[in-house]
Length: 228
Length: 236
Length: 52
Image (tube, rainbow over all chains, first blue to last red):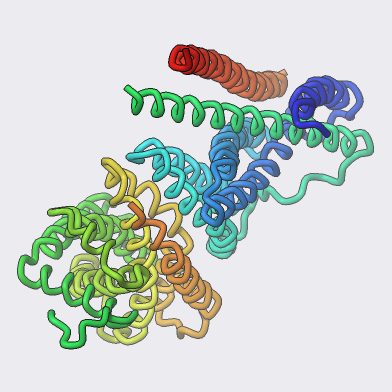
């Protein structure tokens, strides 16, 4: 597929899928027995959460790619994955409590998945902050890649550790698996997942484009100032 | 520190030189250990005030002390790590280090051990003090406690040296050290608190095999990553 | 009906945040694009000037 077509195609696909997913969520999927309408937040929360962790993997790929090849494109991928990942992570942490309060009666519980998500949020924010503090863009890229790789490797370990830690005390109101999905729910979830994945790809591509353009502007300006 | 041969030192040689240098500087000035120790004391006292007596009695030492001690260690360690890399910042000593024809991973290794020694020195004072302040008997469990503490200290020093190195290259990077270090070392601290609690309860170490293995694995992972990556950190 | 309030806020926050990010990105891309065009036009003029 010629590169120039890919981006607009992605945008159109995202714009098309979103309303379909929304229709499916609100019109087709049955309302859940116990929790009622609030359960519908699950259709955005679950995709957001899955894609956040996908983003961590993408960050790892970008970070290792940059450290290995030192080509800017990998770093653009890293920065996009970190930023969009942070955005999705923030939304996970907002939609989670919104769902939890009516469902469990509390806004928050220090359970393994939630705690790991908070820690991931802190790590991503730290990486972006470190970039901002760097003396030169090249140093920023290098350091952010190292931090990104370390964070990505650390996340599974954090999850396991917190899981063991919390395992000491039986959790009374557990966030275990949701009730077996009624037929309409499964397809709504799939559509929603697709919509959010496409949106993620769109956002990452856009952010990468911005990074690339910014680099080129910086290079032009540097060349211009050198000539003077 | 002159070498008769004129060949650059190998990996362990470099590490030893860096280690000796850091420890000698510390031995002469003692500023890092003093600042770190004082800070640790302050934090410990704050914890003593944070809980009312009734709560402390009800929680019991083995639930209270591990968390208190390791949080104190976490923050004090950050004070220590920040200073460790500041040693090179003055008079651009980094340039000399970077130009030296040595394996930069060895520089990391030397600094790692130096930081570990610093932390152990801190703990030797901190644990007895906590025992007194929070009324815990440490003598009977001294050996397993020492083992658990050493394992986790080695890991903490490794992670701290890695991030300390990264952060020292950034403008005003020191502000970032805690933010980066603490979330990343969560598994280490969870393990430390859990195992210390077990030891205080008198349980045998084999009960916590899983945690200890996790920590040992984490230690190894971070040391390997640091050795690989320290080159890239020192590039500029 | 309390349930609908939570649902409403949940979806609202998500959409607003995502839309805001996308809009902000697009605006910055536009900005930087224009700057890049201006710089490149400037260089072409310089090169043309030097060639004569």
